Image 1: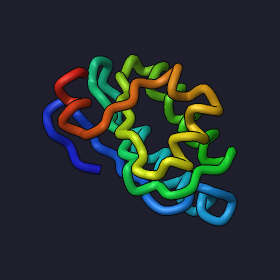
Image 2: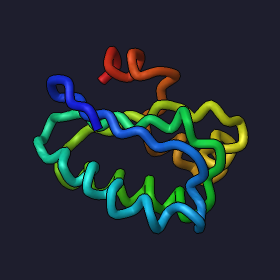
Image 3: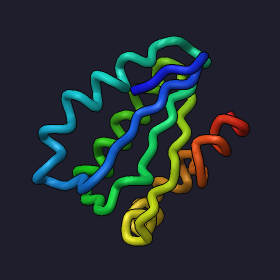
Image 4: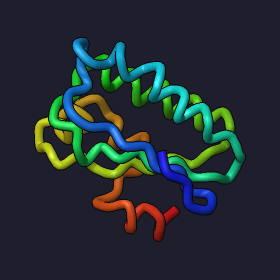
Length: 110
């Protein structure tokens, strides 16, 4: 995670499925939990994610709830994979969260 002003970047990559979610959960939730100040912005970069299962979707939803409770804005950098984007669209997450093509676009909008 890198901090710049009120922006906190969290990058995920690879497969977010049963084989990896367990190992990622503790570290990921610690990074999300570190963003505590109301009005700050968490930028979740999914550009390196190439597979997203329902467990990966649960990870994102839980993070979104954690941040919302603290009044932290969430911007998601869209995945490069069409399959991952399709999973996000099918699950309805593209209607709930703000997605951006790049970190620069997210910073400008948020």
